[in-house]
Image 1 (cartoon, one colour):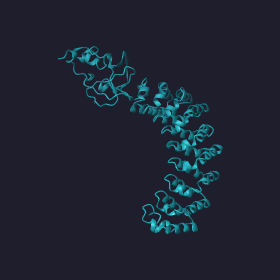
Image 2 (tube, one colour):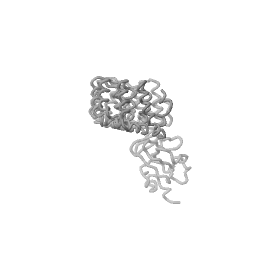
Image 3 (cartoon, one colour):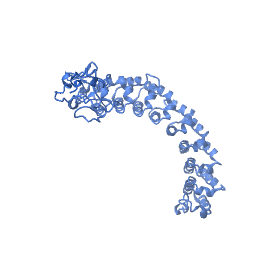
Image 4 (cartoon, one colour):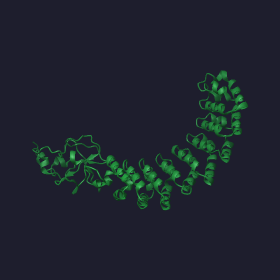
Length: 435
């Protein structure tokens, strides 16, 4: 038999070549005559070794196995699945504890009370089942439990907020902690410039930041959040995750606190309105803003109304302004739409705006739109157009009395030409023509 298998673990070249030179394992575990102890590593599957942070070890069944959310897939223990997710190897001490480098750590195997995980809450917060257990402890409404969790996580709150599991613990902690503890969390996430913005842009961090916005009550805390988010407003509002943070501000904070949103939205209106995420926030903004802030936004949108109406995302912003049914807003929007309704009706996105005009405007303005369409020399094109045919259908639904009869007569005059078009079939249905 190869002499390498009879050498002590710490000096064996086979093991040291895989990075185990510092592990503390008794010499008899490596001897071929030993009883194939379950702690015996399988050298066919090399394992990574973390010499920095102690972790979770399943000692009872599988020996020295550490789970970590960011480690590699590793095998190598008798009775342990080689595809066990997120495991790393550490050493075993003779006293039954676990070693990393020259230090030994004792980790609880079972978690029945919060006291069982004391000293390991930060590590367990990044592991799904243990994290759920820690969250469940908060249901007991014991301030001492909250304090214990807070003390062990406050130094890592930025990291946990962006962790797939840790963010849920931070959210729960923010719900049950006192104002002093919440202030400490807020100070941690705003200590570095743009740190709160960075967390807000993260898939998991955005949830934690939204919960922070929901739970803050003190004026000082709100001002700190506003000051931290304001420099990154444009990045947030255009981001898939960050835009939800801005929307939560609109929902939970006062108009005075949201002043930075209103001013920035008006300043970058056209840029935001034509962005996939930005247009969603801008629509919500139109519903939350009042007074001079709303008037300024309407003015900015109105100055770009034709451009926005034909944009894939901007058209939704124009529709939201129309739904406000503000006389001044409608006057500004329709003044430039007049004379362009035929062109707008034949465009994919602006056709939705024309339909919205027909649905929400008063009878006088609605009549002017329909008469402009009827006066077009290419009216039959509207019946056969893939987008404009929906505008004609909406016009038939909303037109009344003599105007409806006039519209039906114009459609019937083009029946022979348009009836076979796939886009005009619904227009010639009996329900629309015989109102």
